[in-house]
Length: 216
Image (cartoon, rainbow, N blue to C red):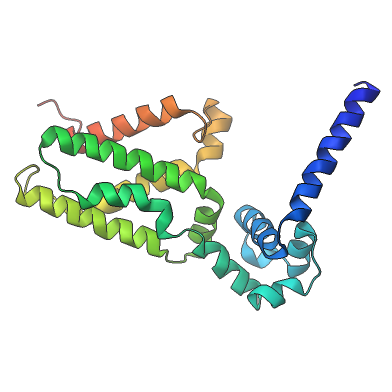
């Protein structure tokens, strides 16, 4: 590495540090907390460590959040309904036909996966501490209503269990997000960046959901 390369690298790091320092202390604490909580158990992350990573004084968590648990609650609250605006809107409209149902389900899978990937750290934290998230509950309820409507309209069989199917879809999406690092390390696929892979994954899941494994 040349002196010029070293100089440019140092400048780049300095600029990144300056950009981080320019953020409000509350935002820096939430970003540092999200990163550390997603990597380790909450009990294994100290207030001092979070404040050090955020570049703030040690009393700032108490000032903004009351406690470490208050910071955790604020981080999880980021996973709000706005993140699921598109899939929820798709589920509010009844399917008009079998083809429309298939296309709608593929879009719901795709947009739900993208929403979870955007807030992956927060999702992993919520799963680790077993916190309920209003967003996922709203999604589950909307999906159940969507499937119940499809049953009433004769688009899917009446023996279908909407509650279980909704849970299955959330389970598929959450596992894809939770194991994104494993998929990247083992298969060399970056789920967040590889749109072609996500499209293939969504189509395969919808195909399995609608047609199963057995030959018709």
